[in-house]
Length: 356
Figure: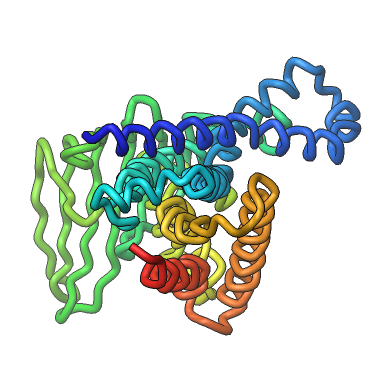
């Protein structure tokens, strides 16, 4: 790595880390100002409130990534412009496009980190909701219930132990239309779950109804049902808020809503935004870097103004597009990616106009 690459990367990381660590404090102050009295009225002490905000830190960090990336890219490039470092780089045969390569690489790394952080956020959101009394703590057991699987099978289960990944007293049935589609009835004493292999039914039988008054029965010690893809947590069937769901869980919720005849547009938008928001970190860098290449404009005040204006514009476009997608005015995928698309196109145009 060249000395200039290290200089650009070090300056960007310094500003980015400062912003990422400082932004959550602003979120906490804003939320506490509005809701602290309500929290105290619920009987929560200051230790519990502090722990609840600690659970929200992954979400606050995720929100701050695009903002911090914009501020860091603008201040890094504008500082180098004001101090004629970019001019010196060009005199040495290094183009502006080559100069910002470290920022692009860092943007890719930060996007990957934000995607990983996005999978942690639903877990911490759930812990916070339980701590704040917004939902009851999850039980890991469920008894005597019926569950309809995604493929149409109906399960009757005597007992479910989530932590152990076991079922006791299981009956699974798929209603058919004989003779074209046979009805299948499965009974098993127990079943165990493995994340890689899926479910294993133990000690039971399978009855296949081929036609009226015609059936075939098979006994088994172990049976591996390929179509049963639900996890023990899915069978627990505890309703979650979308912000407490991972990308995969939101996908299963979409399929459930579709099977029920509902409109999953709102959930589709939220699921797509789980990818779009982390990717915005890279997009914002490509947008912010060429904005700061003019030495004729003000110094620090210019950087703050550009960063603040672009952040407000992005958030406004994010809200408008999201609302349009949830209402069905535009496709959900387009709604989630429209802000990124608009800023990416603008960034490419600005990069093309920069004198290299």
